Length: 259
Image (cartoon, rainbow, N blue to C red; front, side):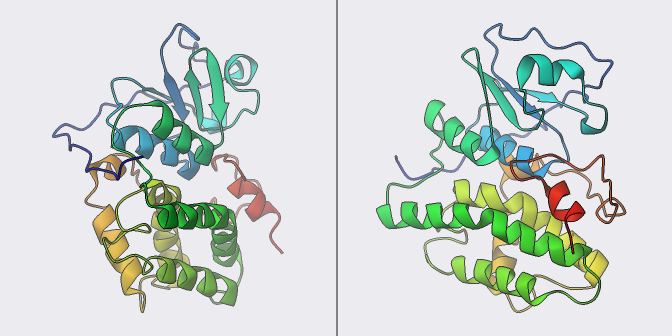
């Protein structure tokens, strides 16, 4: 797979459809249209959405937004029995799990590659993708816990800082922008806001690689198009965060199962 070229930037912001609710009719399912089902505030769905944008597939993969607080029954019954987002309707099949979808979109659609040919970078990519759940859990657990930022969260952030220094041919995890950055950035953007707002903790302090990563990723239109107004967290500390997004390993479960 060739190294990723820069995705062309669009001068116009994509007009996004409204979120569908329990009273909304379904789209004409399995009519040959490729659809990416998302929730706009869901970091897991954001992964697949960024991949779709970066590869320039806005005209080939239609966004369908689901209101997770009032989701339509037909989504579970007719589209995705797991009843989570993201999911992708393609070739009369529906696939889920955000990291799987990023890889699927990269492999099955045209556009800039999201993984370089370099075998060392590919191996490191798999290691980092395998670490995403542990990173998210350590960070969210610290956010919802009382007291200072936990040693576990600090260690997780330090691990990210170190990972960003492995390759020197760019500011991203594999040097150039890749599916690894797509996997992490929806969560890093939220952690930066949450740690600052709840813990008065700057995740970039003493972490210049992470600071540079955040600066540079915010120059990538495919990512910034997916950013939503941050939701600061009364719902992060609720025992029943009904509007919190579903994912591959639900963030809700991390919160509800907290010590």
